[in-house]
Amino acid sequence: QACAKYIPLVKSVLDLQIKTAENLLWTQATYNDWLNIDAQCDETVFATLHNIVMFEMAIKYLDILGEDSSIYRQFTDKVRAEFTKQFIYDDGSIKQGTQTIYALAYVVNLIDKNTAIKYLKIEFEKKQRI
Image 1: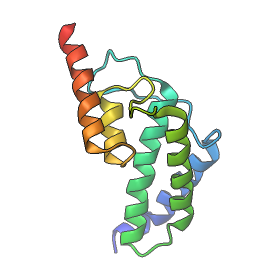
Image 2: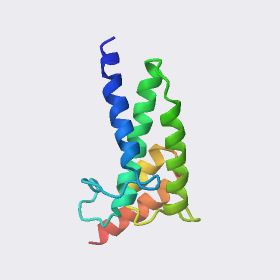
Image 3: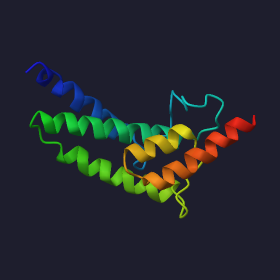
Image 4: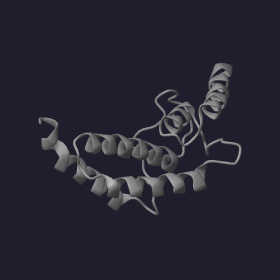
């Protein structure tokens, strides 16, 4: 299979990301909220969420190709738990949440649909007032 030749590369990227995580979180982002470029976004929140998305996609890729993804799945579960503990408040809001933050959190099931809609609407309305 053409995709199978990339398995070592995918695993090496995931392994590197595991090594660079600090207490299950990533603290530096070279990217930011692409739905609102002026948004103030906590780098750790954004970078960690981005990496959760990346891990989820890579796990699906490995699973489809019949590769063992259990190490990455266990790690991702720990990251998800730490992200929830550190950044998701009791009301479902996320530390320095932006449109992109809420969309990504919903995509990886860290918040439910109604919570995502509620806070996406709030963020959208903030932008409309400017």
